Length: 295
Image (cartoon, rainbow, N blue to C red; front, side, top):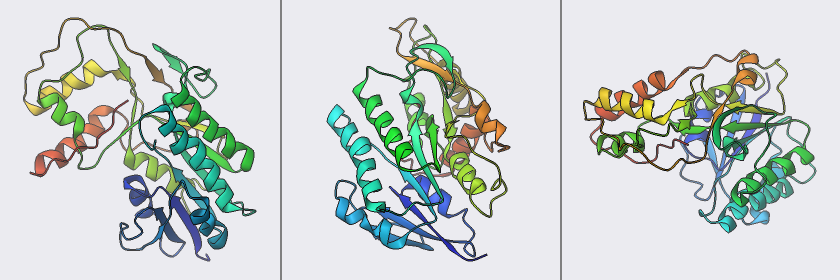
């Protein structure tokens, strides 16, 4: 098989996990980020700035067969979301010019769903039409859809995994949700997102499986955050002392039937499996870094 080029825009932890799963005889990997040197061995770093369309013209020059796009807000304001998602996606697509990769993956977010009362959602559920931050992500999705029929939008829940341990530090210091009302959360281990993309690329185990345009990336166990926190406290050997009551916040439960239908088998099917791995790594290291996300 002739080597093809994979470009990962916004190369970071997820990109590194994906690059490590690509067979070097099948793929050469480009890591596009602000600091070109901050990539692992085997990845060619390319310096780009997502607010600078000219720097992204490298995509048209290198003509990748596959493209993975991971975006984040420039800052937490509405303007930061528009810059980090809407404008960044427009600039990436402009950088591709007339080139159309065979497959484009956009790691989006389950934040885009309108549900706020803990109900179940799937890929056909109504989207949020009121929150400008969600709208910025939806606009990025729509721009990609209009650009390429080969795009796959991966709406990821809270990404976690690796050596970072924000939630563990938070829980171990006594910061947990109130006992009521229950607040449901959804999550996906970073390794599962990377492994799914690798498996569905040419040469991967699921390469021939048709993929729907939108797939929720979430594990098998959307559960109350209180359950996760209590389990973590028990695993860490610290007291679980939630307050009695708090104001209810927006929350939802996300179905993963489409992900399952592709034939992909989750490495970390629920929070116990995923956080068991995180706990092992965290307790094995004295340097405990922040960075674990749970939405």
